Length: 109
Image (cartoon, rainbow, N blue to C red; front, top):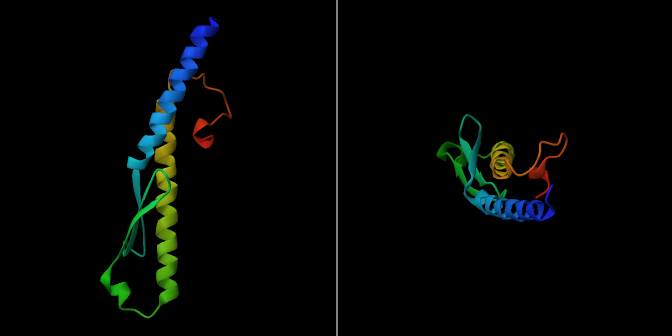
């Protein structure tokens, strides 16, 4: 195997990974709880973008329930966006890296 070719492939893969990581800002997922009364949108960088709370919940005195629904919706959104982000990163390395069992590049970045 030609080492300069391998080095070139690695640099190309690094550039693709950087591009993919930057694109995660635009990968979004929504989680909801309480029959869609609380919705949270997050991006692939695991930043909360928005929280939508239906009006009937705002008129109740049950602060703890509302907090629990926000947490549940946020966690669902984060789980979903993590899967989407992993897929985005996986696609960016296709053809560059051999499939090595147990090596998940999406967990490295």
